[in-house]
Image (cartoon, rainbow, N blue to C red; front, top):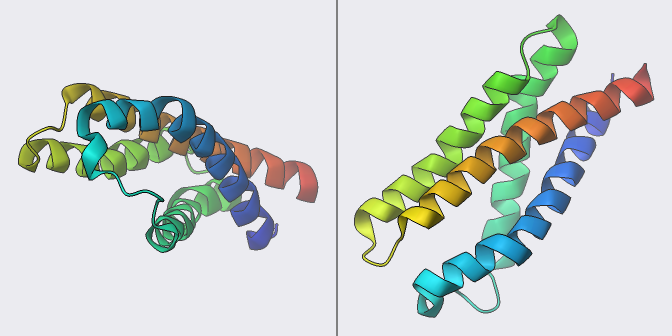
Length: 131
């Protein structure tokens, strides 16, 4: 089993799906509620730092144990996604005047589903490649 394959597969799935969601759902939703606060263009460095670290943490905490020992995969990944995205969303909702509950619900749910699916897909792709 190759860590590089696992990381790359997980990251590719995560990034492709998140780019689609950000473009067609999240950007319009956030623009509706907090449009003047959004950076144009986005700041690439913080986004890249988040994605690199998040996928690395997901692979280390969930995907590697699943491959090595058969540890559970979907539920732990779902919980990590809900916690990570929920932390951002609920904190923002608590302290920012125009934050809206639809942003919280949509992004938190998406974070959980995206994280679980990406972990599953990364492990599945890695198992197909490395048998």
